[in-house]
Length: 250
Image 1 (spheres, helix red, strand yellow):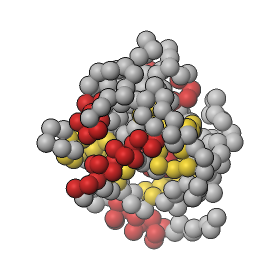
Image 2 (cartoon, helix red, strand yellow):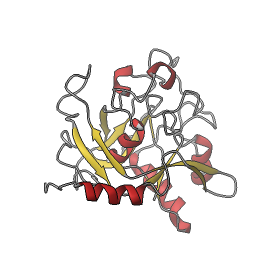
Image 3 (spheres, rainbow, N blue to C red):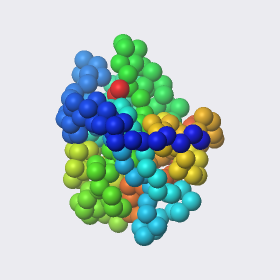
Image 4 (cartoon, rainbow, N blue to C red):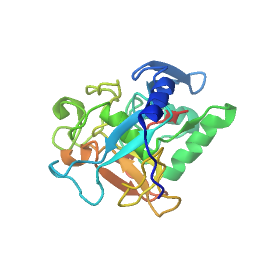
């Protein structure tokens, strides 16, 4: 993997482009005549992806800490995609714990691509986040294991009652994003590989693989799997009651 030299001049260019809008600015994107999705602007920048060796309960082979540069900003949904939005587009609701304002789960990565294809028929540019984008947004400028007080931000096996909850029931991170820690695992666009420390510049992961990245922890899992750096994966055609997604718009 080619190494990129990130100079002060290059960073200044990133800041001039990326901070034309600031982190946390929100905007609504129409899905159809009934629903819209509120999204938050994430400006371009740099961050340390992965976890330091001192972080408790880390996975050293999956979480090697490395600097990542994102040269383009993006819009990311404030919340996980709800069952109401899914049903309004797809006409069905495969969710196990059915409630309109709960996150859609029990859908596969392949299913999400069909959903996104329908959304983009009218020229929209929705997609899943790349893994580096997801962690950058999750951290919201933080460098610890969690982007704040985990007890007020996270649904996990110790407090969820083994059920999902309405989205945005917990506290958001500093950039206004809800449920980045816990609740349901969120699918990313990337193929999964154990070590991503060589992907440093607008990373999109390997070109092929067998599993797709999942991030954020989930309501029947241990809280340690809700850490900002924790990395999971699943097969593209696999659906699970604890896996869903949130959207990005370019």
